[in-house]
Length: 354
Image 1: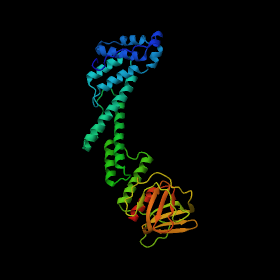
Image 2 (image 1 turned 135 degrees about the vertical axis):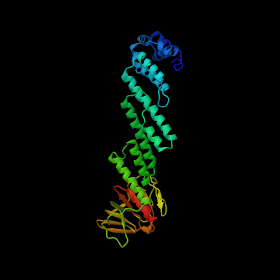
Image 3 (image 1 turned 90 degrees about the horizontal axis):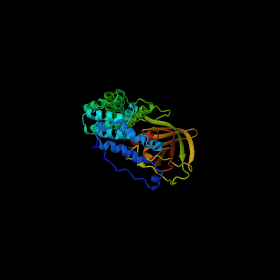
């Protein structure tokens, strides 16, 4: 114990503190520290620690709440190596708990905090070094080797570590907001081996379904949608949604754009635009209706007008959080305001115009 806690010099009170005979809070901590530093641990008694406490004022003791727990925490952190604590250290910690008058509840909370953090760090480092899926699974399913932890706490720590590992893998896999069949298979494999369920809540399941759809749109066969519009021979519908059609005051009107313009042939990325709204205050709302995207055209069926734009006439498009600006080669470039699925429309449009 003496090699861990180092002797410290007591702080001298200033003239006002001396005249008022004020007990310094810092000196209370130093006196307990020096008792631990200057003696063998098993020679120290609970009475010696209490005698130091009895000399303190009520105000000093109140301000020093948690002091004894901090000494125990410091030594516990020192004793933890990886996820292990030696039997000798456990004996020392038990005696330290006794002389510091700590309860089982106090010690349990400290162990949960310190051992939990140490075990998670150990597993994180081991996972980073390991290239074997079997070894990773064994590691995540194994219990922390510390008899001071209850079975319930051990199980909770393992669950937290597994959930963190699973979340990290999911975050890395879906960083591009797409999920391939191979990535999904690996995700399910890890889920089964760790007994962690993917998609346990509606939000996660919806996110997974969206990422799988995005991958298919970019890499597989575009999923078709039934269209209420009369389509030409060989024309297929891939997207439809309720929208509001806007046009500017003049065909050559300039606007401030903070979005990335996607030109023909460009690779569209879901993260290529900024989450800002397109300023439509000075634009005319032409009509409200349904927009249909096919392999040939963009069809807008409004309440009073119908508009058709061939895909080869679209020079570029710009995505905003509230809709899409369609830059035509000639004529009026409209802004289409969607209530939802803006990124889905842009992803399909990018695939089609390429």
